[in-house]
Image (cartoon, rainbow, N blue to C red; front, side):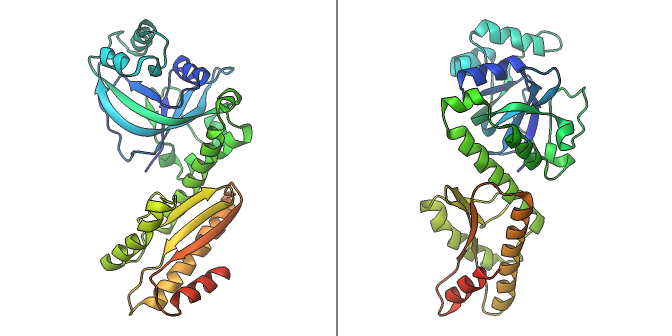
Length: 301
């Protein structure tokens, strides 16, 4: 899991913003479709000049959904103005301008993006402690420079707010932005913890305990974890953690669980997790006295 910041045509991204497009095709001159360490649901930041600025900055982002290779003709037939331009002629001119030799590639990489969010003001690299060369031509991985850079960008953007025009179309971008910030903070905290010390059998138990919440109760996996779950709503954020242990190491696993809760709680407080209350839910197999003991222990962490 990793976010990408991509040098973006300012006119294209402004068109999507003004049209209120939340799902669209992000075309690239390269015919390669794959990025390393970048998958479905990850964030692609638009690195472009803002409406009132000559400098490049992060002006918004969207979630990666899928990738494919298409010709210009196929792109227009499939997506039309969701390519970022009103007419095919405008799109063709934009591709020619972006190409060093003015030639339109036979095939281009097309990234289908969804749930786009646009910032009210650009977030400039220097504002988040990021050094970006002016010669950057394609993309970069912000978190490879600083492990918390995605969170830094989102937090800085929160200070200026979500784009007022995009927000007037629907209230969903504001909710989505807050959810994305929560997701990124928890994913970063989870990465800090490293791997769980579970055996293969304990991993199986953990996944089994998490499955019902994933299927029916609106929880999702914290990225980077096999069974830690989150659910964010109006009442706050819930982190659900499975208790997986064998008869020989139950005490040790209890210590691990309480330590994990302490780390989540402490780091969430330090990062200023958005939203209301943070609470924890322990998932465990029914065993006399165990569940009540764990629930009582969690209250005092």
